[in-house]
Length: 506
Image (cartoon, rainbow, N blue to C red; front, side, top):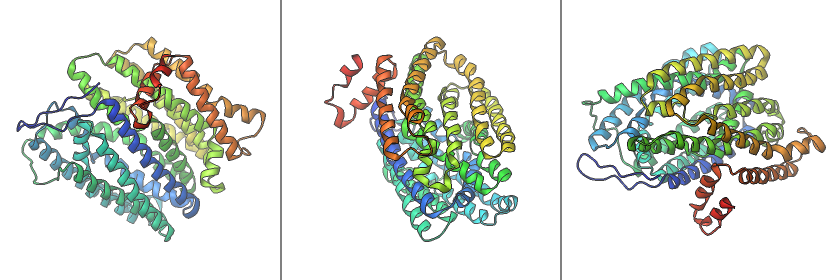
């Protein structure tokens, strides 16, 4: 698929859009590099500077801030991406809305700082939350420029913004951790991330939140209000676990839980890249052409399950040695938590874009109801799981994953009208490839070294063998994701002369 340039109100044209495949290459490149920077930073900070208790304190503050941050975008990214054309006046209106709601977000986080500190009995929570709140004051500098780049699939700009932000966060976080700023180092790093992202985004696609233009913003606010309801409910499901675990179990357990959740999320983003941000504008173009969404959705499911399922299964199996190697013995209890949380990702990713596509197709009301049910299920299961300690909390995520898949399955099928039999076939082949991927490491555990004794060279060799078995299985089963994967690789400069197409055909 390729995107068409948009005409502005004044008759000009937006920059030419790149293809979906080219956009995916840039998006994944930015995601991989920023992930590498953030991952190395987190390993160094956790291993040498901060304890689980210190990380847990920051995690509670950040989780509380992220619940309020659902207002930060106010649906502007989706609103801008869904417009057939956009003018300079539209940009000014969107920038005005972004500024207004960033002030609301910063105010909400600041207002919650002292009550949160009293609730958890941790005075340091208040100043940490105030630092995080300051970051949302500069967020409007990035929101509209990033949305404008996404609508034309100019993801080389996203690459620059993400990588620059990650570097800023790493430099500040590492320096202040080394200087002994404890949990505050992570908060100042978050502020640096927002500042750098905003400055770089404005330099690439200027869209300052001034002059203010309030006339004509009612459609934006109306759409944003409905979208924000969905995002707020989703935040209650995805952002509150650290807060619940911290309140019920304490700082040390929430530090372990947060580290396992963060590592799982980071690894999922590493292996899937940022291609999710590419799909929304791509599906918008399919909708605008009047074509069926089902075939394209099956391709998305094939790609996600073929790549993320074996990756998360491998992380679940290797969780104990991975945690021990990366973070040291003080974090070793996170291993079993990481196993359960990684397996949950397999369930949650089985039906991708469960919020994006209903928004795109105008089913916001139904999505609000489903999101509310999903959030209540997530929080109640997590609270119940905490009765069995932090491992019970992690196990509750598996139960939640099954419930979420059941909740959204029928709805997505009715919405997109994909071929359920074809999807079952894709899942079967992805499951087979996932089993092949973890087979070498499972064999090492059964015949040679246990998870507690396996050495790093043996672990790396088993993982490499698993990757080879995974790809061979995809080729043998003629998995539908193979063509897209090889086509994506063929788009890379260093791979253009390789016989990738013949490999897929063979």
